[in-house]
Length: 474
Image (tube, rainbow, N blue to C red; front, side, top):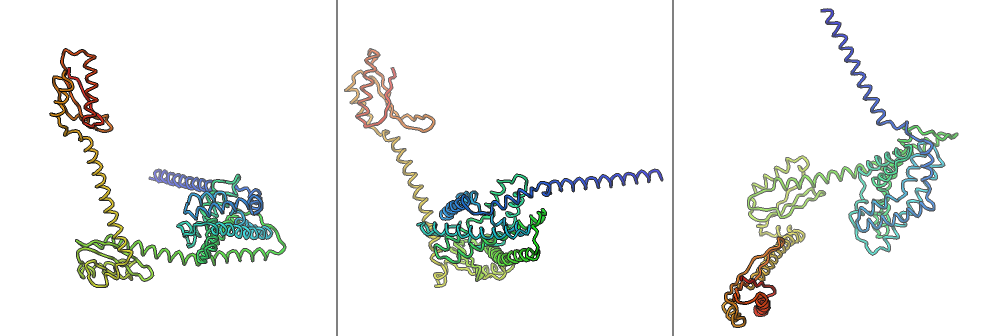
């Protein structure tokens, strides 16, 4: 018994050692997978960030023309053109410079970054303003509207995009493709173009919302850069007065917090509205069913919390409507929603008032589309019948008269028959009028061929046929 107990103890110790070894291997694997300290090139990163801050010469012209391209893309609502403009735009430099300089306590670089950031903003907005002022197209497009309402999602995009950018820059041999991808994700250029559009069209709400969106992206790209630079322990620039650096870092954190709070409020409002719209639409599709009645249209108003449903057909009893209202209250997201049912059979003025011009236009449009389809189907059938008529146009020829005339003109004919032959080349089917003729056996081959040719020509003219076939049965 003691021997067995000893063996069990050895097995337990061995199992524990094996488990510990596997855990250490996993930790080592994860460290090698996620660690970025060893592959960070600090000196090159600092040089690259400082080099990309300046907006002079080539960078300024590239920015101007990329703003023009982005403005055109927004103007015609072309995402591909907007993305192409962002790929060539040098907007990231000053923003990354702000976050990086705060992290390493480099006040001179911070001042240079802020100056160039201001130059970049002014140059971009002026370029977009010039384009939208001279552009004949002033309509709002989905691409423009999408850059006027910042949400918490914009904050998250800026944070993750900015983090990816600075990590890519710190790697030995920067990852150009990642940097380009960040330029697309953070979308700094379209908001600036939308600011120019708002100023050109005097739409101050668009201009303000777009500039706020740009500010969100800028602040959180800089904040992400600051955090990553701190984690990678970039060397600090030494100053006699360290209090100045601390005040600068606190100011940057305060600005980020002030920008984030309104964005959270906007995101929560947008989320609630989207839930209301989706849940109310789901309720209409799943619950509003009654034999003989059909939902023509429904409308949702988030502000008043009213769900209007328009029905036509068989009148729905009030008991059923009351049941629908009770089912609506059972929905957590819709418990405060007011359900209004408007029925087409109601002859009162209420239905006429509630059935808006938009509803009527929708009904007329639906009827027009259906009637248009019916007309097109009938046109197709008429064309088909006409084609068939052409195929069979020669089926009613006066064969008795034609055969007598043929015998008078060609006395050597002894027998003649006629039929419509269906012929196909496996891509289409055609009907060919065919005459079979038996000639006098005393005729020579050459004479018979010559008579056949004349007979075919005469029949084609006599019957006004485009095509026919004459066969000899000798």
